[in-house]
Length: 121
Image 1 (cartoon, rainbow, N blue to C red):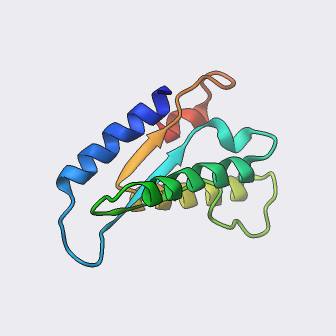
Image 2: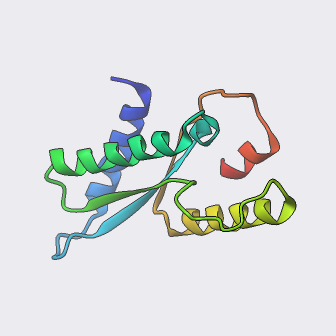
Image 3: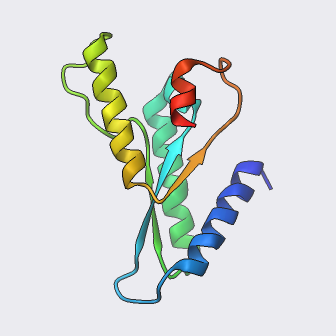
């Protein structure tokens, strides 16, 4: 079993133990952090990660639902490679992390530690 799946399974077990059994099912948000936002097709990478979360919901009869939050989910208007856009990305990601109950961080080395990587960790 890949390490990422083992880690996610552990997180899910902890959530399942704490989940109240009430209707409607509680929703837990998972911030999906990692270097995938720098891949050639980061939107597809995010869609794949959130699809995995949806598939796990469908395959298991958990007393809760999981929702993946991907760093590229927020729409950043007037996207430009400048300081203001960087600040808007930062604030949008902070808002997603604040909404999340769990952060699932892909810690695989990508380009090495950078100042932006420390923020997500």
